[in-house]
Image 1: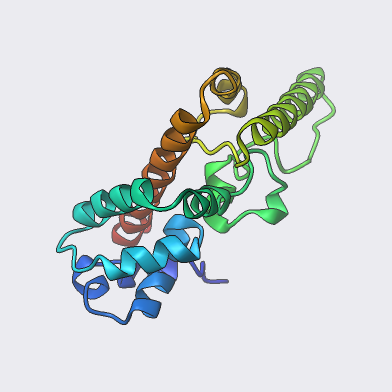
Image 2 (image 1 turned 90 degrees about the vertical axis):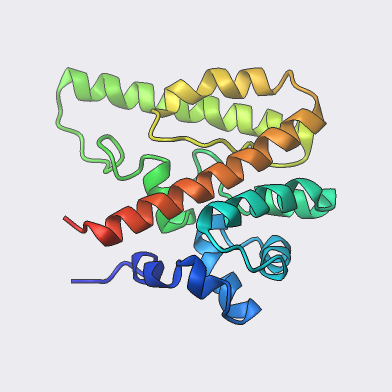
Length: 197
């Protein structure tokens, strides 16, 4: 049986410990929550102590919004593209993007329903790819959204609407999504550690 390298770091994600460890150790401990955005993690390490994880995420949001734009884009682009290849995403993104759910294992059952589901999956993947390309060409950074278990098809309207927004508003929205994702990852990891069944 293999050990999940992300879950094995959960004990290091307590505010008491994070507040006192060396900056590099802090950055390494919280990197899975933020997909390892180096400049952001350095700034977050320097903002300690937090006292609680809620305050850590409040500080993370404030820091993300106050950073220079190039560092904001680095933070957003640390997340994989929506619909990226399953082999190219982190363990946490793999689950968040739904690759662990039915329809992504590639095993067709040979039924008409399975064939229709595959056609729909391919259609949605192509549309996400098209919207990603348009978004990145318009804004200069990746579309980042808190998926929260929604099916991919449910994300298409939000991507379409985002293309009509202005760049500053999209930058703000994407930064909020990054922090929301990190807070959800923390909650998921710590809940799993407390109740592994």
